[in-house]
Length: 115
Image (cartoon, rainbow, N blue to C red; front, top):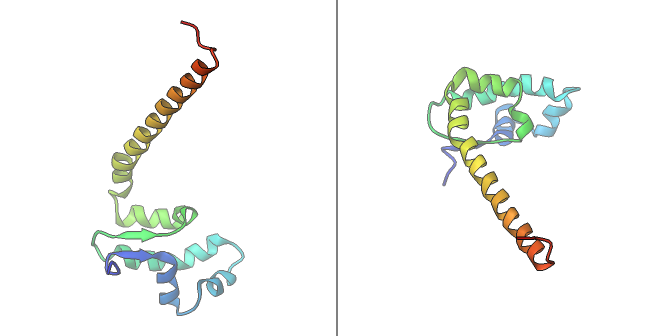
């Protein structure tokens, strides 16, 4: 149903190299070498020039993958900063506010708050 605009990067790597990802990873001593080799798959996905969702581990979007994003999708980082960061800050502020209320109520129950 969503396959034309969603991509699991690991699955796409397996399709591209026609073998399980574990076998590809075993060819390298470090994940850095693995990412250097597999960045071509990410490049192909990004060059489709359509809106999409790409699933991968957080550590996968460092170094080579992030460089590829910046090279092909210049607005990616800007959109991340403009959309996601304010949402996270709003969420954080709400959690802090709720925790303060809960702490205050607990202190009131044990009579530790003075007026």
